[in-house]
Amino acid sequence: DTGVSQDPRHKITKRGQNVTFRCDPISEHNRLYWYRQTLGQGPEFLTYFQNEAQLEKSRLLSDRFSAERPKGSFSTLEIQRTEQGDSAMYLCASSFGEEKLFFGSGTQLSVL
Amino acid sequence: GESVGLHLPTLSVQEGDNSIINCAYSNSASDYFIWYKQESGKGPQFIIDIRSNMDKRQGQRVTVLLNKTVKHLSLQIAATQPGDSAVYFCAENRPSAGTALIFGKGTTLSVSS
Image (cartoon, rainbow over all chains, first blue to last red; front, side, top):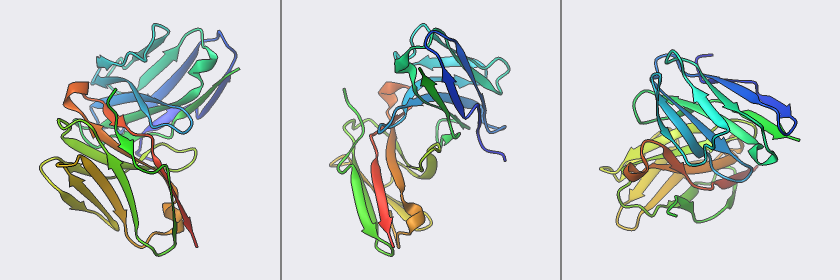
């Protein structure tokens, strides 16, 4: 499978715990994006990388969120001290250039 | 704030009919638009895109129409099949918003056989 891969598919955690998600983009894509999606809504942009540089962050990305893409390939998104409001589907997408984002299947986070 | 919106949250059609899903956008500076299909439990799947210098683009069974005068985008699906049942999102690349695609709320298409 050469699409965007996300791990884990599902994560259940208790409030206050830290969680980390991983995204492996399509190999030749230089751009990687993180989005968040809640039930009944469209995806909301969180942040994006071009190669290893994090070039944009949404105001939705609070201090508890941090994303990295250390070698310009896979990326991780960490949420510290999770809150119930963090429950959502976290989607990763990649692209070559600024068009045609290809999405992974997402990580569904449930904070109890 | 400004956002990409849709005229109808749901659309129900019979198998074999043509479907038209509409989307209105508010920012005339937007220069690139994409339609995505999302099935339950999956990420959005790219369907078709169009740049603002075009008014029509065709794919396999799908056509996207862009009317910049009224800031309206539509997705036409020919001979709709049960497998087309999903939520459809339009998204725009708005230069003032940076690189990110801005998504609307989606239209749920239900196809009955």
